[in-house]
Image 1 (spheres, rainbow, N blue to C red):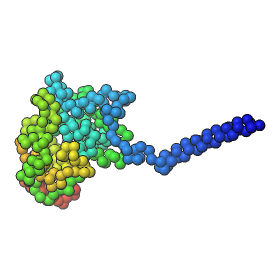
Image 2 (tube, one colour):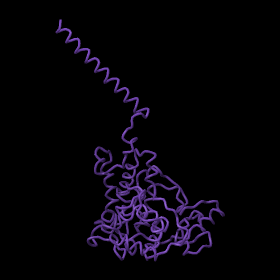
Image 3 (cartoon, one colour):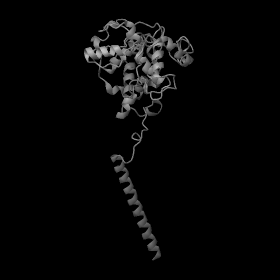
Image 4 (cartoon, rainbow, N blue to C red):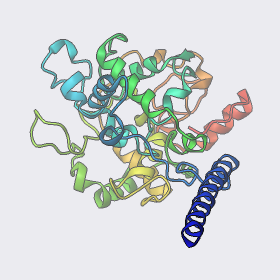
Length: 339
């Protein structure tokens, strides 16, 4: 009899345990669906995809990796250091990640995270709705001081595949964080290159050198830190040649590996003035910039080259103060401009 009691107790315990597991599983499922239990992304632990850890098993892994390589080793694959002269589309030795830091995954540096989802989009510089490939064309001709790549080339397709991959499964609340640059409280004064020089000497020379020419082991190697002016950098038609854009980038990212978009090192004024200093030097000149912004009311107020629809001087368009120009476009064209 005792033997049977022991068996029945064991069976009862197993049935009870099974019911408990079933109940716990059901409550977990309900909790996740209703928000009682946080998933990994919901808990704020989401982070951009990484080539090092997240590429395995992707259908277009080889193409995505090629795009990553083009972005991080641009001079060697599509620039002056490319073995195949026909592949030398970029005219300088910057990499794409000279601006789009950490291969386009760092917030506050024109990140590629989510960028694929925002195209096609209207672009005032061309006055039309453009594709992501056309946006890359603009970077090639301006920031890279070169020429367009064929849209059907493996290198271009790889870049788009990489950006698309980074833009997949991005939580809505994260897309805004990774879009564009840090916010700048725009000083209501003219940007002063002499004040900027003091900031540069204190914070920037350790990487970019006193002459702003960056650092690399030799002329056949990639830059460890890119040149900021001179012959081997972005041309005067690039967005980074606009003081406001440069100041936003600098505020969120410089000094390198110290500043972040939400914890800057420099003040708004310091970023503003050092942007003026960097952009006060000679650099390559893009041809035919007068064709930019066919509808000139859409031209950013900080565009340093004409023609413009207003009577403000070229010097004010380059160095500011920019608020009077913004007020003019608000009054005359009902356009609220921030750049």
